Image (cartoon, rainbow, N blue to C red):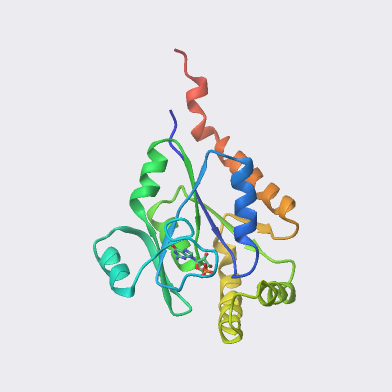
Length: 198
Ligand code: 5GP
């Protein structure tokens, strides 16, 4: 059995990552979502252990210092990080895993696992991104300004990714991501087992 592949998706806050990821997972069941740890407050509708593991700063720092995180970063005043054990477990089981993380963390993943596939999701325009973030209605105006400032910096990191997808209609965006996954799974280096004689 071949091992799973690690996919990383980044993109500015409000670009539509969660919606596109949900659609990708619906259409491609062999993909597991990596649940991150964070110190930010839970938003309405979020479930601990499903959306994120919501931790205090002390709990987070303990995990980070114990080396339990594959990557971690600070984003607009809060810590975010990927617990490493579930990622390794999925890959060993032959299940592909998807990380929704910001660029500082994405670059740490790339450094530690060069075979990870990095995908950046961009909005059709910056004005559209601002409109989506405001329209979501779950983030205070001062936080929106910080997230937009962050988004400008995130765009400068996009050329370091393997792919850039356009966050437009959900089906189109999900289609682009699914095409990337399919192409990566068909790489000759991952298909050698098909050439072996029994
Ligand atoms: P939000 O607070 O809107 O859920 O996420 C804010 C940002 O943190 C998003 O860009 C998201 O991709 C990123 N993020 C979520 N989990 C992680 C993580 O485990 N590590 C890193 N580096 N970023 C994360």
